[in-house]
Length: 212
Image 1 (tube, rainbow, N blue to C red):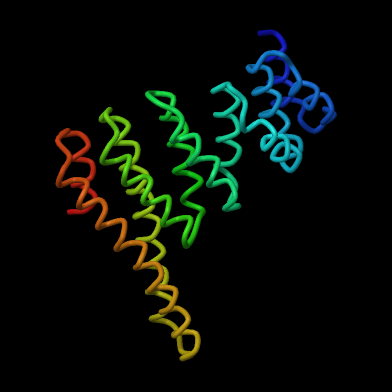
Image 2 (cartoon, rainbow, N blue to C red):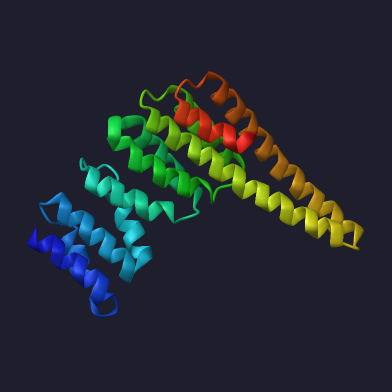
């Protein structure tokens, strides 16, 4: 598609010289492929405007547009985008769900508290119930990456605690460590339960290597 390629080129090579209006006009195109390209290019020029426009397009009946929005949201930390990911993961099926899962996993790694816990539950459920082994593998990989993130965070906190000479600071660091361990314990428990029921040798081996 000539319009699609033109928008991509503008976004890649002339991002700082192209008026936002050019991309916003592209969002009105009759072709969803062009709309997706316009949104991606707009993000390279004005991310704030792109996020606003993306929210208006969340109900678009086009995987191209939905996946572009997912890529945009995956780099954000705002908890409000969690609902978009969960809605699309539950509504998509087959291979179409795969890129959404990958973007959700990236987004989830920036989340904390309740939203992270909810995401861990979602990934765990998919790692148990998805029919395709590669979809279960993708969900398990998401849990593994979260585990690695929090393993590293725990190590960093251990070092800070060991070098702390201030009692109040040490108390706060241990509080943070307890929160980190809560996440770690949950992820490890989920992975242990998942691997015990998994029959596919690839998925089973991947998880076993991480938790053994």
